[in-house]
Length: 206
Image 1 (cartoon, one colour):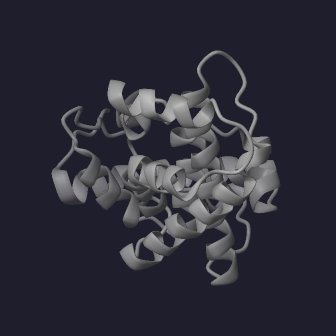
Image 2 (tube, helix red, strand yellow):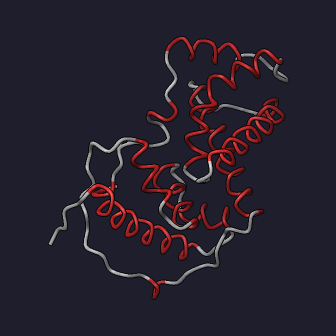
């Protein structure tokens, strides 16, 4: 991510599962069919905090983020019999699957709330000098910066930089042209640089 690298990706600390949790998760994923109430509770305890972190990147209001997470768990539990983790590491595949459900649920909520703006064009871009981001920024600092972005800028930045979506995938998910996704990403980076200077100070290059 260059000079706007915040230091974590979807496979990083937000989805980390320690050894004991991984063993419990492996036991659950080794089964077939629907989950038991006890297994649902275990998965809820294992992943609630992580999925809340994902939801808060999209929903500024904490209570709405909480609702998104709970709705996501309901969907995940209903769809669990159809989950097919590919590769030897089913826990990683399951984590990514949960995140995707949460992201989609958050975007659906924003769409229902009619907070998804119209598409933008390349001629709306403004030029801003690059600002080096501090490697010492904490997750809460990053969330504070993201909350300062317009809704669509925040969504596209999250999807592209943090969730690993491609622009064509973002375009399909948000029902916008791929070119608009690129524009929103560029404007998000510009906005983050400006907010970084405002809240934490920054260095202009050049």
